Image 1: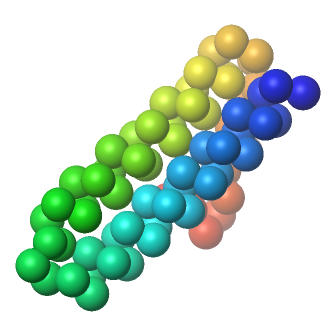
Image 2 (image 1 turned 30 degrees about the vertical axis):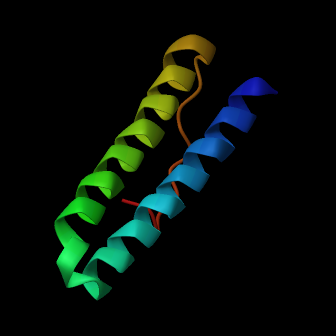
Length: 67
């Protein structure tokens, strides 16, 4: 089902965002840039979830470990 595939991609994007956040803590010289990128990736994941909810009528399945 396309909705589930899109939600899987959103979940992957949330994981990428989390990884970028972790890298930002470890790399002070580029911390701000990594944090901005992390937020952009997370926003993209959220937009995919909203798209699925609007177009397919499905509630996003949020992972409790992802905020």
